[in-house]
Length: 153
Ligand code: FES
Image (cartoon, rainbow, N blue to C red; front, top):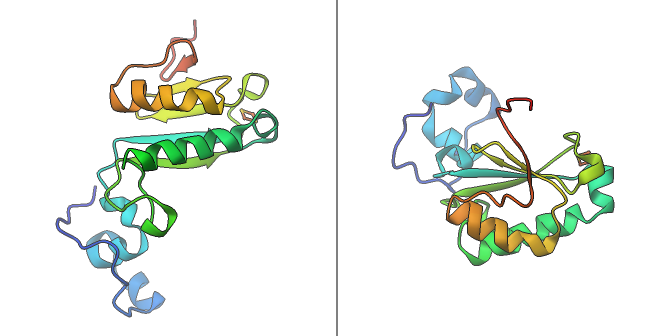
């Protein structure tokens, strides 16, 4: 785990060369980590993955991801560069993932660290997932198909 505090993320890498950065352990160089991977210092609470595999894309996963992006920006929760609408102290990381095996029941959305895999998610479902699950900590049971770790039942 990184132990640096009060690192002003968003600043440049101080003109360090790639070789200079590789010479020392990246974990010991807070300024460099901050410049290269500001997410390492973000107060991340959840990571939302939206499958962009072919089957999920056919049922609107791109629209689902865009709906998450809009909803999280509107609530000031999205971690991203400010130029992309979020901010560097955002609590929620939103990324694509490739197929997770929910191809026939997509679009698949995974919420971690809770390990909840949602199925048949549509853009219209996104405000409810954000309000219920992300903000209030209540799983949207009507869409939740798997909880990891699973008992396999
Ligand atoms: S394409 Fe999304 S789970 Fe397979």
